[in-house]
Length: 238
Image 1 (cartoon, rainbow, N blue to C red):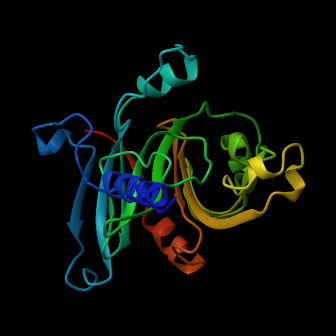
Image 2 (cartoon, rainbow, N blue to C red):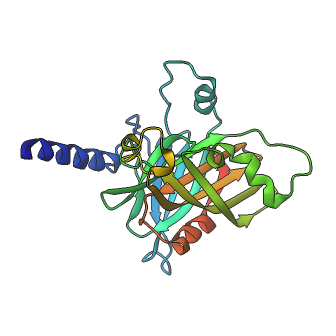
Image 3 (cartoon, rainbow, N blue to C red):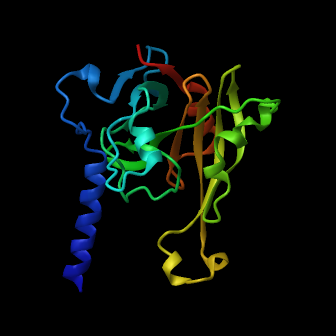
């Protein structure tokens, strides 16, 4: 039994290290084509934050069943995400796998790490902007229905922190059913313990994409989530 537990522990540690290993998904030789780039902040802020630049789609999602939504994500026009993370945090060039179990609605996710420890992920999706007279403060509901209407998880309530005519970034309170407890309560979802954490969402109508950043429970507080959200920008890749 001890040997079995040791093997499980080793597998978990191996998965965590792999998620934060920083190995390029496709062994790109040019730094310009790598999906993630990092740089220290200026002299006044480099002790507190680190600038990160990510290109999405970060890699091709496997799609053996030829799901149209996956094909659409894989063929999306590349764009760039820039943001500032706390010092010591990075975005790995590898997906989180099962290490970070916060549910979402994103493609080509990459691990967010504190040192060698995976603490979250960032991913993207595409959307079709809606016309009509939708109030700005309500527009996010049209962009993120898949994150708001599930019975297993919610990225809601949501609070905008930065808004322009075509884009918005905000902080979402995430709750989800503990994936380690679901099988213990078959047919009784209300009895499954819930976990809570924070996430960051950002959409751009012109780019027709949105990104989401999820963090494990306890990885950060609301003030840190708001600071990250305020630093996020999405732009076309030149």
